Image 1 (cartoon, one colour):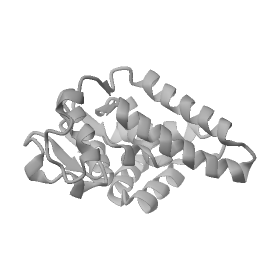
Image 2 (spheres, rainbow, N blue to C red):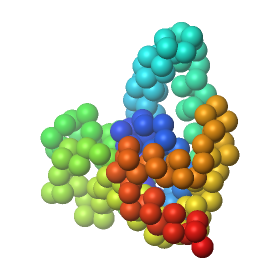
Image 3 (spheres, rainbow, N blue to C red):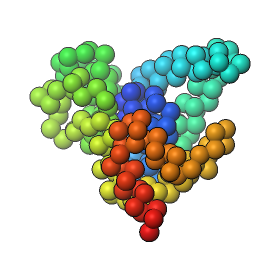
Image 4 (cartoon, rainbow, N blue to C red):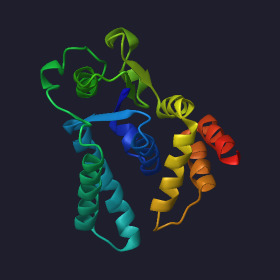
Amino acid sequence: MFAALLDTCALYPSTCRDFLLSLAIESIYRPLWSSEILAELEEHETAKLARVGAEHGFGPDEAARRTTSLITAMEAAFPDARVDGWEPLEGTYGLPDPDDEHVLAAAVIGGAGVIVTWNLRDFPRDHVPAHIDIVPPEKFALDQVHQNPIAALRAVRSMAKRNTREPDTVDGILDKISTTYGMTETAQVIREVDRD
């Protein structure tokens, strides 16, 4: 199955993460990440939840607990997603930002065909092996939805059912991924399938 390494920036926005991972649950692609990516996600997600918690009556300990629960759930849902053994390659690609070396190293070791990131300029084409594409989440999502639009619709329906705190609909989710993450074409493809 086609493998894609999801950079932290693609996993950090909650609905984007849920959508991309819901596509993976439908076996449209296989997600990959490293321990370093999960550590970055944990740090940023905990900080985000601490800010949200201040508005909703829970503190930093609850934010940390929720983040740990998220990471645990991700690893349970995708037990083969974590790429190990990437450390020897870190620092060998000469990327503009040395902090992104671990992402490319994990993609190479994991056999990824693509790195999904909004940080395109941090992965210049001449520093990345030819067999790995660098694409933003909106392009990646569209490519995957084109592969199997019916499975993509199932993924969005599952998202709507899971969202019990803030009930949502398929249209509501598609509106959000369209306006917030630039996935307008992706939402349109799924809507066309939903109308059939």
